[in-house]
Structures are given as structure tokens and as C-alpha cells.
Image 1 (cartoon, rainbow, N blue to C red):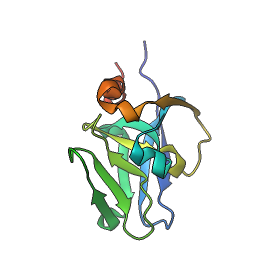
Image 2: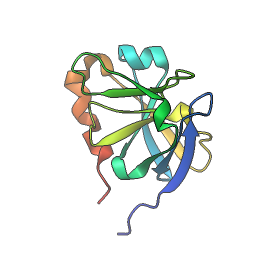
Image 3: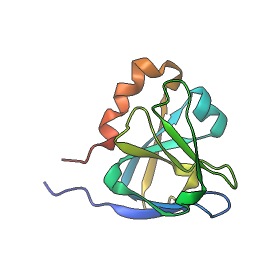
Length: 135
């Protein structure tokens, strides 16, 4: 069996000061979470391994917000306030990219599933596989 092919897709914040790229397969599993943070920001998670994410511009513009356990590193553009990606508590070895911050979703099939983040402790383990490289 051959490895899954990935294609790099660009994205960024509203003002353009922070830019990133993420390597995605043809079919992308994403989560729409109902936790207080995601519900208020409209974040749609595409969780990827470290190797499939790269910050291409604006590291100096990133501000960080943490709360509760302080494990998740919520990063946002200090200029426009948009959170295009962050280091999730569920997958501290990877990144969660906001599908809504990609320049385009052309070139892949985005499949968004509901995730019950209001009951995060009971459900977080369902996300662990997303930051692992495919076999």
C-alpha cells in the first residue's frame, strides 16, 4: 500500500500578516467543536502532524492565549485578532488549523463532523490519531 499523497495549501489571518501552509490529503476529516472557545470563534479544526504544518510569515505577530490547564497554545494575529492555527491540548504533538482560514478549499474534500467539546475530557481521545503520520 502506497502512502497517502499530500498537497500543500496556504492560509492566513485577515490582515495577511500571518501566513501558513498545511499539507492535506484528498479527503480531509475536520471537526466542528461545541466547546466555549470554538463556538465563540467558529473554529473548524483540521488537526495535522507537526511535519505537515509550516508557518511562512508573521511569527513575530503571534500572540498567545492559554486558559484552564494552559496546555493548549491558542495563537492569534496581534494585528487583526484572527486565530488561524494553534497547538491543541488533545494533540500537543501537532497543529490544529482553522479550515475557515485557508485561502481555498479547492483540491480536497472537506468532511466536517461534530465534536462534543463541551464534554472534552470524555471525548478528547477520539482526536489523538489525527496528529500521527499515516502508516
